[in-house]
Image (cartoon, rainbow, N blue to C red):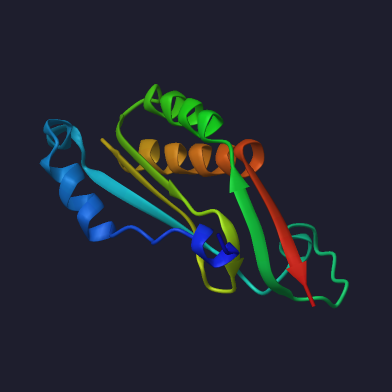
Length: 136
């Protein structure tokens, strides 16, 4: 199997929203937020810590621990006002512009949904994934 075949096809956010709105819990929801992380050219160290070594990202090796992701999703459902959570995470060799992950949160009010999205994406990025930037 080649590295390219490891990469997954990105989901349809329109379909995700259609399915979420068809769920009986949708009657309790006043907002949906979507996060779409993509591979960027700027290294993480430069964006997060201001460290500029002059390099640029040319791609990334990406993997995740599905059990840890499931546990974080379950934790997110326990947050106030959260009724819908859906996560898709890519894996394998990713190129610039490729989708890394999609997250959809549905909840009652904006503060709850924003908090849940920030919590979930932060936990996934900090505790569930391994990303190795390839630089040039």
